[in-house]
Length: 128
Image 1 (tube, rainbow, N blue to C red):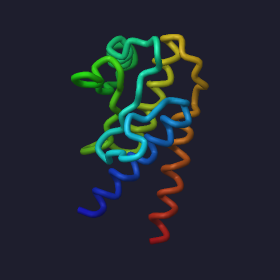
Image 2 (tube, one colour):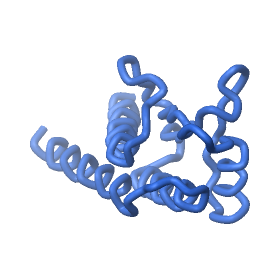
Image 3 (tube, rainbow, N blue to C red):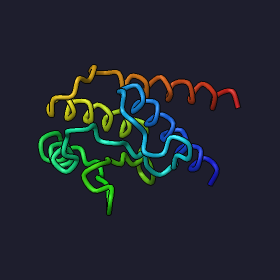
Image 4 (cartoon, rainbow, N blue to C red):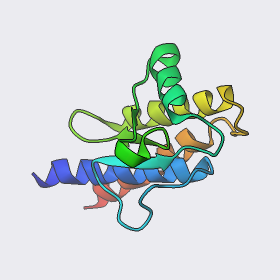
């Protein structure tokens, strides 16, 4: 199971790096999960509308928050069948959707940071 756990940690780290590069806040910056990366939706944006736009207009499903976090967070999954390009595409779609809703997002920063993290982890894996 160790290769599976390593892949989940690798994808989680790439997702977190991408989110931070986009200037967004992580839901759990000190105790992150290898299953999903929670991201606070920027102030003034309806997280439900953002999630629907991602799904209906961009074809990318990113889960929203539940309970008291409904409409306030998005959750980018990286567990199960997810792999490197799922994280990169998810971050790119988030940038496009945020721009659609008026956020000042520099396109490519999130996916680029995730790609750098993935390349670095591939090099580290090759050394083991």
